[in-house]
Image (tube, rainbow, N blue to C red):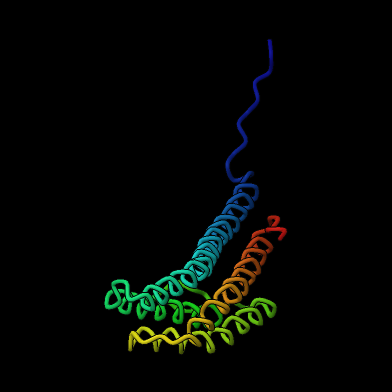
Length: 177
């Protein structure tokens, strides 16, 4: 015959129950915060990555205007594309609640975004003039043709820095290139 154990009264396990409760309460908000941060990082990286595509889209629309191919439509599209690129470029270092962008905080990333912004100040006037007037001269063509790959490359570097920072904050390995 085996001896039966008496159940331990709940109040003797109260400390253990409270400890487990506090532990769970401490982990759950942290896990939610990490998911929120990961989601925010995803938005930032997606919008920064979209900037690369927008550099190509702006150039395409610009060259289609120069070729007088559906110029009126491409002028309107180029204006919208420039506006979106400019707003996102401003929002990456400063934040933009409507776009869901938190401001970048890492010095290397901010410096790279500043490099992109400087290039943009040279690139944008030609795009805006082409969009506004539909008149594009050889100097403007050369500026966009030579500036586009550089703008794309600088923006790509900014995206890679944002990806590395997000990976570091989430405790996972980041991109290597």
